[in-house]
Image 1 (cartoon, one colour):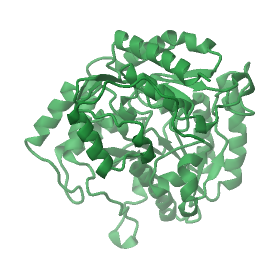
Image 2 (image 1 turned 90 degrees about the vertical axis):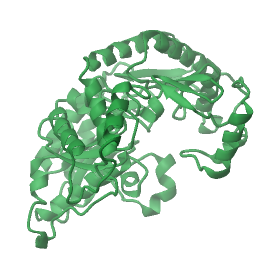
Image 3 (image 1 turned 180 degrees about the vertical axis):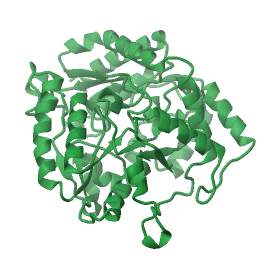
Image 4 (image 1 turned 180 degrees about the horizontal axis):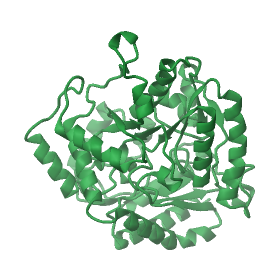
Length: 469
C-alpha cells in the first residue's frame, strides 16, 4: 500500500536558504521517531526562532506550537524569567561533576522539589532525560529490596498500553508494540496489568452508560488479583498517572491510583509514578498524583521541569528507600548509578526559573480555565461521524478518529490519517503531531484565548481533512 497520504495544500515555497538547510539536514541528521524515507516527499520544517507559543521558519512563516514541542515548553518558548535565570548562571558556573561536589542551583532546586511534590518524597536523584529517570527508579527499587534482604523481588508490573521511554530498561516496562516489539529479545518481561483506560474505543471496555470511576474500580479488581499472585517477586509497579500519553492519550479516573497505592502498601510493592509528561500542571493539578492525594515511592520528572529549555530529569524517593542505601562503603549498598551531566547547573537554573514562573500567579486556575475553553471550542467534534471520542484531562485534549465509531473499528494504521491532519494543520500555521488515529492538543499555558481559538478551529478542520474517503 502507498504510504504517502493524499496531497495536502503546500506550505509557502521554501527560500533557497531554507531549502539548503533542509537538504543539509537530510544528508547528515537521523531524525527521531521518523521513517526518514518519508522526507523524500514530506518536507522537514526548518525553525529559525521561537517565542511564546510561536515557532518561526527562516522565511518568516509562523506556526503555533500546539503540542509544546513534545510536551516540554509549558510556558512557551524563551520565557523571559527562565532565560534570565540561564543568563545569570552562565556568568558563574556551567558544569561540575555532582559526585563529591555540590552547587547552589542543585541544592535550591532539590529543596523546592521536595516542598512541591507529594508529601514524603524527600530525596532527589538527577539524570538528563525521562527514560533515564525511569531507569533510576527501576534500579533503585530492585536494589532497595536486595539491601533489605529480599533479593527475590526483581520483577515489575506495568500497565497494558503503557509507555515509559526508549532506553532498554524503560522500554522493558512499556507495552506499546510499535516501540517494543522489535527489541523484545533484549527486554524485561513485566507482569502486565489491565489498563484502566476509560476510552470508549477500548474493546470490551467501558460501556456508554458506565462512569469513569465505576469502570476504573472494576478494572482495578482484576489488577489487584494479578498483584496478589506475583507480590513475592514484584519490586514495583510503574504507571503513568491518569494519562497514558504515548499510548494514544488514553485516560482514567484517579480512584484507580488511590486503590493501587492501597494495594502496594498492603502487598509490599513499590509504586513508581512516571510523571514525565503529566507533571508540572498539565492535568490541572501540579502533579497527577495530587488528584488521588497519594504519594508514590518514586516519582519521575522531566519535560516541563525546565520549561523546555535544557535536558534535565529527576527521580524523587523517600527516606525509607534512602536509608536502605546509607551504610559503610564495604557493605556494597551504595547506589553507583551516574550520568556525566547529573545535576547540571545550567539545567537546574532553568528549572528554578520554571518554578519562579509558577510562583507568579495561580497557574493551575489558568490551566483549568484554558482546559474548559478547549472543551467548549471543540464541541462540534463530539458530533462528528468519524470521531469515536473526545476526552480531556486538564490541558490535554484528545480526539480519537474511527472508521466506525459505533462498532469501535479504528482506521487501519496504514491509512496514516493522523499524518493527513498534521499536513493540513501546518498549512494553517498550527503544529499538531498526532499519535496514529489520535489527534491531541497540549499547548503551552501562556497561550491566549484568541490563539487557542485558532488552534481549535484548525483541529476541527484537520479532523475533516483526515477523515475524507
